[in-house]
Length: 70
Figure: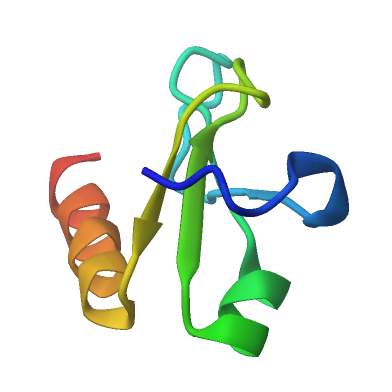
């Protein structure tokens, strides 16, 4: 998990794989990923809480997992 990037300075986008009922909301920071190569992931219900920092490959694996188990 990373605490290096301030949550207010990052544009967060809700994943299209998040549940529609608001219970499973995952957000990621695409602009940050393009600029740095770090893929930041957080729980939208806890925007100041912990987040994951993934590599491109790790993020691709997470998306694949969501696609197959969503």
